[in-house]
Length: 128
Image 1 (cartoon, rainbow, N blue to C red):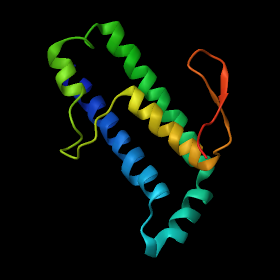
Image 2 (image 1 turned 180 degrees about the vertical axis):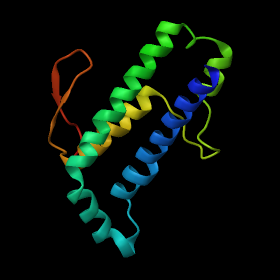
Image 3 (image 1 turned 90 degrees about the horizontal axis):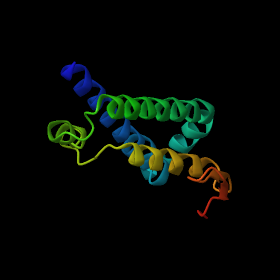
């Protein structure tokens, strides 16, 4: 069971690194030589990427439910590996981080979109 939890945490960390470096990093600051190609790629893959964001956020929610229901989220040993850096890459993973990265990617696609507020209402994106 411990190995399965560690495997899930590793997967979470890889997703966070993918969101931050491979996706958002390239969207915001692509290599100058490949900027047109990179932006075209993200435009063409928009629907698949937005669906993937939803799927990854669902996995985060499931992980949080499992952690809170098992009561392991607060133990020292669990906390230690849950907040570990991704393969020495300096990227921490948490549901809040993943949520923020997903929101930034959605904002990149649609900076004027209406975003859900934490209290269940809606607010207009503040990017611009």
